[in-house]
Image 1 (cartoon, rainbow, N blue to C red):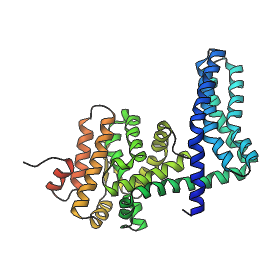
Image 2 (cartoon, rainbow, N blue to C red; image 1 turned 90 degrees about the horizontal axis):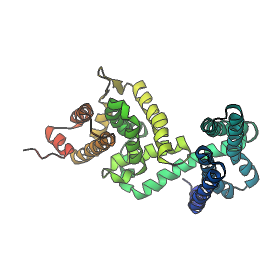
Image 3 (cartoon, rainbow, N blue to C red; image 1 turned 60 degrees about the vertical axis):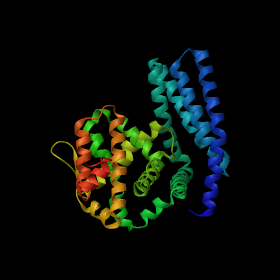
Image 4 (cartoon, rainbow, N blue to C red; image 1 turned 180 degrees about the horizontal axis):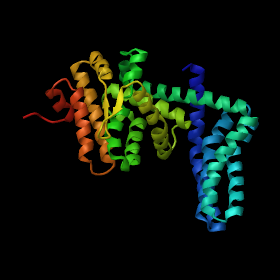
Length: 329
């Protein structure tokens, strides 16, 4: 990322950090006052969401940008449109929870439609800014993890596209074997891409950093865990599986699980030493077990699927034992 863009992103981040506590206080005060005046939890929730989103998510961008008036009008479309939808739905139904839910959704739709009609240039700038934010996230992470960046340099661009899906493969292998707990498993995966430093292996960290950038593009910027989980499950993960299936690198098995073809494994093995391969597989095992255990007691089929995948990847039984952290008798 060019120095000027990095400085611009740093200024925006500083503004967000400064306004974040102010936004939470104002949002809580709005919610408390609304509840006191109306005795409606749902209306208080609506006020909290709209005020926090505007002050924390929009005001820093308004301050940061030169055309502040047009930006302010654009960002006010969401709370303004949401409030209008809430009012109309409540007048029609007199059901507050329904009015609030449709108001939140309607505000997003209203802001997008009016934005396309009257603020198209701002929407274009927003899309460009989100790409810059994603690049900034990657630059920040890579600055903290130079060993991860060095690992990526061992692979060509096309090779990296083939192998970077390993964390998504692990998620698919273990989490989708127990779909009833999918959201809990997805939260564990979201934790991993937010905090890649939890994993010692540099190659796995680099893959998670790439996933963080893709998720950032999906949700605008790293927000709440709920937003990240939803974006991950509905966007990044779904696209990863669709692309892997299209390329023939991921197929469903007869038992509803997943199997991978060996091309990506060969690329990994050709570019890693035996010790590095062991470290990478151990990191995948740790990631897989964290995903499994996030849903409570691990289902036997989940652990079996994970161990079978690692057994295919390991060079020998010794590698497999080392990966699993088991001392062979």
